[in-house]
Image (cartoon, rainbow, N blue to C red; front, side):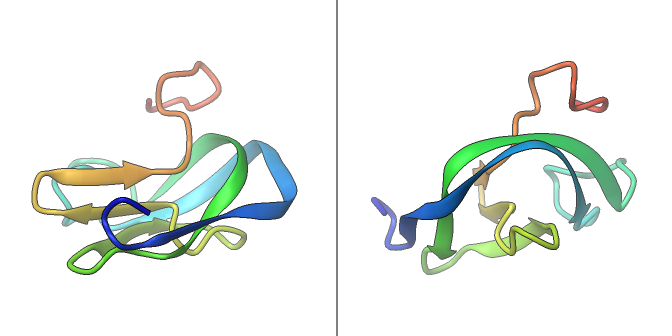
Length: 87
């Protein structure tokens, strides 16, 4: 919201494993496979991304799972937990 996008509460909380497709040309996902298993845990979602951002990760349930604009990136999964194998 602070950067001009829209974040809204989800009708249903997403908690558990997911597979996301990532843009491996992005510096955030360089050297990684194009599909990665991640752990989701959120009760909100990005409805519109801020101006200047590009989508670099998405799943069937989450069209804006990762985005980037220069050195600012946003992700909506947990890279730090053991449930995200490549995190």
